[in-house]
Image (cartoon, rainbow, N blue to C red; front, side, top):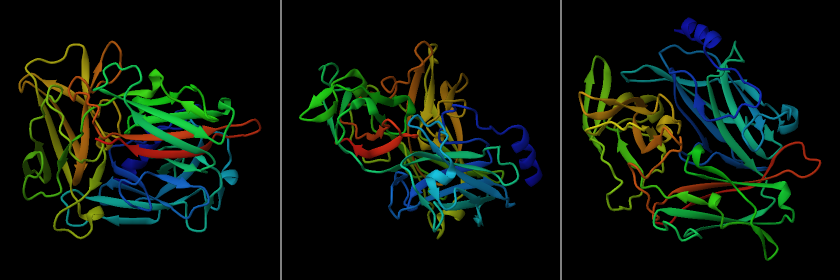
Length: 412
C-alpha cells in the first residue's frame, strides 16, 4: 500500500497554484475524518489569540494497516485565503513545518486505519502575526503533493466588534431571513477594513459587508442586502455510535463482507413542515463509539446510505448533502443521484462512527446558488452559527491582519 500511495502522490495529488483559494479539503480517498480543533476540544473553532498559550490539534486517519511518513507545514494567507508572500521566519518563532510523529493504528475494527495527530504550533514555537493560516500535510518525500488542507485563524483583538442578529431591514420575507449587523470601534477609516460574515460552514454564504456609514464614531456595517441571509432550518442528524443497534435516524445497521453498512431512515421534504427547535450540531460532526475506551482508534468506518424518496427527479438542478461529513463541498462526492428503480435520490458516504449533522441543498442549474428553501425551508428561528472576521490592512502593512473575530449563534 505504501508504494501505491507514493505513486498516487506523484501523479494525482494537487500542487499549489498561484492565487489559489485554500479550502478545508482532503484530496485522496485514503485520508479521512480530518479535524482541527482548539486545545483538542471537539467542535471548538480553530481560532487562536496572538500571544496566547492555546494550541490546535490536527487529527486525520489514513486507510490501511501500514504506517507512513507525513510532513506538515504552516502557511500565512491573505483575507481571501490565498497564500501570501509572508515568509515563515516572519510569522513564526520556531518551527513552521515538521514530521508528524504521533500515530496509532486502529484496534479491533473491521476497517484498518492509522490515526495521526499533531499539535500546532509545536511546543516552544509561537505564531507572531495575526491573520489567516493553513496547515498542509504531504508525504514526507513528496512535499509538493498535498494530501489535506485545514484552515485556521489568529486574531490580535486590536478592534472592538459588536454584532446584532435582527429582522431584515427591508421587512421582506421576515420569517424566512436573518440580518447580521456589525459595528466596529477603534478605527476611523473604513478603507482599511474588510468585514466578512459566514453562515455555518457554507462558503457560498460567505459575504463581505459594505460600509454603511458612521454611528456615534463607530464604523457601521448594517442594513444592506449583503447583511441578509436565508435562515434555513434545523440541521438533520444521525447517530452511528453503536453498531449493535440502530440509533437516532438510522433504520438498519448490518455487517456484510467485512464492512459495516447503515441505512438512514428515508429523508423527508421539510420545506412545508412546521419549524421544530432542536439542539443539534450545525453541520458539525463528533467521533463517538459505544462500549470502547478510545474513540479515535476503536471507532469503525461505516458505509452510510441516504435516500430521499421522490416520484420524479428535478430537471432543473441537483441535490447535495452538506456539512462537515462532506467538508461543506458541493461536488460529485456530496451530490445525490436519482435512482429510477427506487424512485429516490441516493448517496453513500463512508464515515467514522459518531454523530453527524447535515442539510440538503438544492442547486438550480440556472443560477448555481444553493437553496435551503426547496427541501429544508427557511425559518427565522433557526439557531445558525455566524462567523465574523474583521481584517485590517493600513498603509505600510505587508499582510492582512485579523483585528478581531467572533462566532455567534442565533437565538431560536
